[in-house]
Length: 360
Image 1 (cartoon, rainbow, N blue to C red):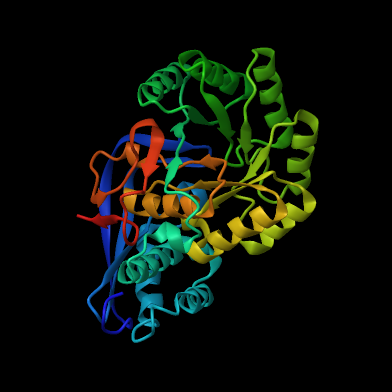
Image 2 (image 1 turned 180 degrees about the vertical axis):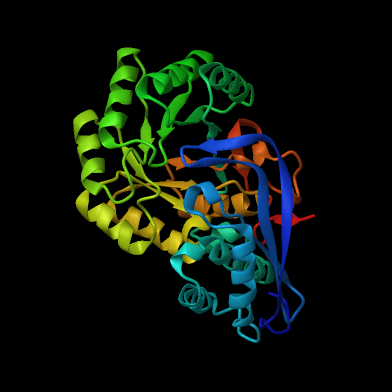
């Protein structure tokens, strides 16, 4: 532990644009440039922590410009306050920023915890529970034609990755052909599907039926119905048996409790950008206490935000699904430190303090 105060003395935010080597397309839209905001928080003893706000407008309408304004406004309230009382600070942040400001919450929360754990000489994963120091991510096949899906799966196979997440949102027959192309290119891969609310339950069931006719069984289906259609999620799982992951349906602790109580999902997808660090962490604990599986994912983010999410997954332990692959879409890495490695591995064993990633 460094000598000197742990008071927060400065918070800075700067917007950054990062070109992408290919568009990242989901049912709600696509992005070809990453607009992100890097946040730097400094303590009285000189320790600095870093965070990132990377909203994905196609997912929930948040923008980087709005996140930057929210970071600056909420950050001013922390000046002069003790970073060691980090849970109190994070609770203050939730009061200051509404739930639809998840990216700003994530940036400030990560910067705070990065600074505090750097000062304490602890890797961030230890704060989250320290269960392991290594997690393994899938890689996504975004929306596109069957030939594109086949080519993407061949590239994923070459990376040594064994779990593939496939975005769906066309007709059931078109998507079945795309999924079959992925299975052909990487026959040993476990396949998960993600509709991002682009399907209703009947459409999702039709897709699963077409895939089963081809001998393909997905291991998980994210959001096979609209966010508030819990009855649809329940009916989907009961009729086909494929586990449901709640993404858009999970907006905070209240949703986590409702999903657990109703049995509408078997897995909760935690995203720092969706709800901030503290609420995502608490939702993970709710899932574990309720016997639900945990997935840790993200929007389109740099290795800074993805690294923080990897620490959450490693700290919680027992995370069944990890989806932290979007740094692969960046034409240039604007950070240095740990990141996505061979086989989709995030190896955090070398991180001795904080997140282990800083902007360049």
